[in-house]
Length: 133
Image (cartoon, rainbow, N blue to C red; front, side):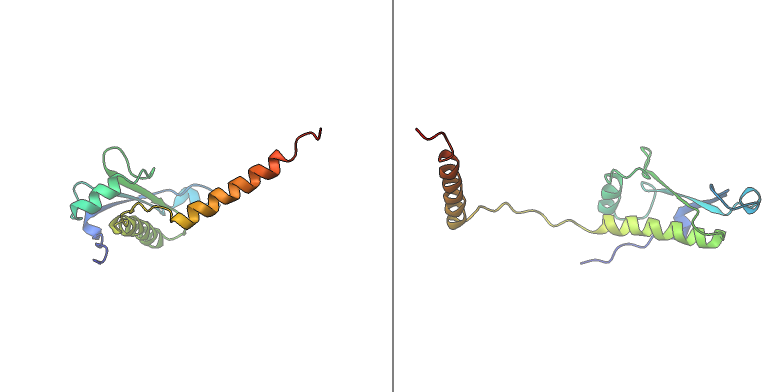
């Protein structure tokens, strides 16, 4: 199995924005949330990985094929940048994993017989619940 491709920082566009939520006076002054944009179609990822990323159905993947991740967990911009990159790499890792093809199987004759015997037994129990005449 091939290791997942690593996303290079040169293909990622970072913007520093103000974080939402509580943070006192600091939250209004400092732009410490990281806004990451990654264009899947223009990236150097393998075509198969690109296709699976675009087909993820994840709300972070836009119709234009750009992944947008906003990280505002930490008070430091560097930590938030690292967190956003980690989340993007997680998405790429998940898309790089090729799902195993499902092979259709048939139930064994013994399991079919057991199932039908159980149904017949249950049917007899229910049939015996009617009014006694």
